[in-house]
Amino acid sequence: MEKIVIEGGFPLSGTISIGGAKNSAVALIPAALLADGVSTIKNVPNITDRDALFDIVKLLNCDIKQDGNVINIDTTNLKNVLINQELSVKLRASYYFMGVLLSKYKHVEIYFPGGCNIGTRPIDIHLKGFKALGAKVTKRKHKYTIDASNLVGTEIKLDFASVGATINIMFAAVYATGRTIIKNAAKEVEIINIMDFLNKMGAKIEGAGTDTIIIDGVTKLHGTEIEVIPDRIEAGTYMLAGALLGNNLKVTGIIPEHNKALLNKFDEMGVNYKLEGNSIILNKCENLVATDVTTEVYPGFPTDLGQPMSVLLTQANGTSSMTETIWENRKGHYPYLQKMGANINLENQTAIIKGKTILKGTEINATDLRGGAALILAALIATGKTTIYEIDYILRGYENIINKLSDVGAKIHLEQI
Ligand code: EPU
Image: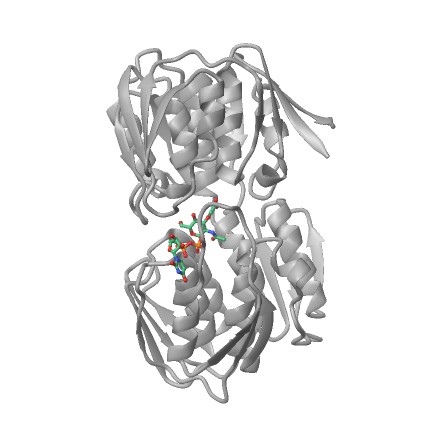
């Protein structure tokens, strides 16, 4: 086991390059199994969620070849076997094999997925979608068996614009007979990336990125190539690092439009930044203005940046608020920020944050992926030394985070426990 040790207070200069989006890659990898033959996925981030998916792909008897961030998945010998609990609980995105295998084989057996403990995380909307297409779902303890004699396209209105359910229903519908229309679909940009991959395989999908997605079923999909889009959450996390400690810190390989909600908040707060094509240059600003942030579905302020953003709010002058509306439990980092000296009061889903406060280094635990990233940001600005435990959560979703930060001047390293 390892811990992260950070000596705070050092400015960040130089360039951080953004990798492929976790939440796209974790859907594109299972999606490759829909095609017959070999698919190539480029710009796949080196994160432990990727490795957990590889284990499932291998269990299903597919061949994976990896060359840096490029992976090839060959489905020639695919076998549709039970995905056991040990593998499915390693991450949330194991649920994508439900849609993929149901679509291709009309049968799937899999255990309930895992993932960070940020809420109850039901999958009822996914299952409702599968049932609307004609599938029968049987649940025994934590194991799901989903069968269909035939999947038939229909109109499905999601109770909530769930990212996972939108993608999973797209998967299930690609091989269905006739037309499926998903209404109240999630509009997150990652879904466009998934649609593009499926369409390059031969699927007929339109509308991803809007709230209505139309899928005309096909009978065959072939291997193809896709590139994972840049990770807007990784980008946002390092943009926040730049706002806190930048000395001409350049974050490159971003799509500014995907981070519009964060940039709007930067404008309100007076963050010192300059956009240059697909890069942003940030400098620390001493006089940040307090603001109110509420997470929303895309294009609103992303829930995945709420926790990192709360650290910037501790450095703004006056009273700010951070309200989380998507997940019930994205609060695990707040007690640790309080321990470091932040002035935070939690009122249900809202954190009232009074700034600015000096944060002091101490011993803290990552409680989930984005909460862990928030604690790294807090430790980077804190006085003295901070030790962060339970860092596996962070490595699930941030590629090479220790080197990326130390390369731009952060005093951060891993130590064995
Ligand atoms: N929900 C239901 N029923 C469902 C599905 C979702 O009630 O069947 C609820 C959830 O409990 C939650 C809300 O709907 O309250 C949103 O869930 P959504 O399905 O949109 O989330 P997800 O697909 O499970 C993905 C990302 C999350 C990200 C959310 C929202 C992956 C693997 N995960 O989760 O990423 O927060 O979309 O953008 O793509 C992260 O990267 O840190 C992370 C948690």
